[in-house]
Image (cartoon, rainbow, N blue to C red; front, side, top):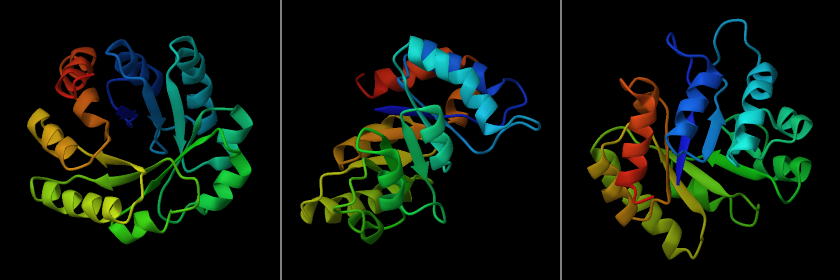
Length: 195
């Protein structure tokens, strides 16, 4: 699974970023709270939502549970300090997709029984593979089957290594947007993931 996270870019609008990721085959767009000056989250979502619907692409928003509900998008990604995950589930209902940032296995295991779809761990270099592997192992040894997503810039080799240690998905932004050809970059990542 590949998630594309929009960026505050000098080169492209949020909708253009999403369009290129979708053209490259990405089926999951996360609209980041980091938006260009003068663009509201609601405006960004209104522009991207029809594109996602037309292409049957998942659309989630950073942090804003109420807006996700109001606009009837697929779900929300919760960061530290955002609404409680169980509260978000209650507000959005059983069909919404809810992801949560995590730093440790304990953070992920605390989500047990709360009907959360995925947990996101930051990838920040080669040392991260061992750290994420340890977290995934601890979570799996506890019998918790939640999707674990690694977020950050990763090479194809690093992604493959992370897949072998239990990572189910990857969330990237600048790796696509900053590429000379974002559509081709998306395709290359998906090919590396075997998708």
